[in-house]
Length: 270
Ligand code: NAI
Image (cartoon, rainbow, N blue to C red; front, side, top):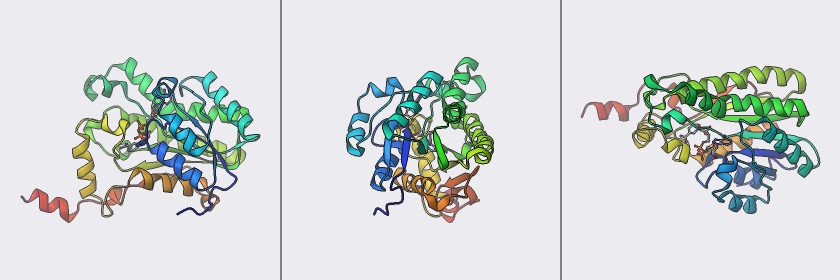
């Protein structure tokens, strides 16, 4: 059901790779709620061509940008402002990649060159995006920026590997930039800590299926889906959450505050 929550708002969505992507689901929901969009992804992801289907569905241009490249980001924000004929009201940062996970390096044996790249793509890229918008004064007063994170930033999930550190850094950037952007322009910046979700990035984690079913059993409401995450993003981009900033918001069916569930106890007794 649509509520026109984003009528007249203009947003940039990073990270729609295919129809399972959280960014893809969010773009569809934002469009449904009346937003105008610009889509972006890394040039290598654009070559897959999938994003063109989404672009057509939500009537949005696609502007390629590698999140580690400041020239690309400047070009993206300038292009988006030109397209909209004004400033941007919301941004979804839905970007993550671990080179060490990809190369099957365990946490205790990571390659530090890969690690730097992982931290740049998955965490400092939020700083780069915000810095670009800050320098160009590209985000409207009371604008909203959301980045996606995972609870491995606070608690140990061994196979999440270096991405756990990347998410901790991402949440730190969101909080710290959130302070400065809040004071300067009332721009709010939050992270959503999402349940494990079957997507390309998610499935890269070793033993991911076990991970998903464990979280399902450990969450009173069950795991949150990508579509439900999209709904939550819409609320944060809307004017109904104007005073929420610098928060890490758990969107996980209650997983984060559950010690154990009866379903897990029953399983352990077997
Ligand atoms: P996805 O694989 O569909 O999205 C990741 C996106 O990052 C892709 O579109 C990819 O092209 C983009 N990307 C990678 N390197 C890039 C670069 N250099 N420049 C620009 N874009 C780049 O997977 P998903 O799950 O939708 O991931 C979105 C976000 O949600 C990520 O931050 C992920 O860590 C986070 N998240 C995912 C969970 C899951 O279980 N799937 C759980 C909690 C958070």
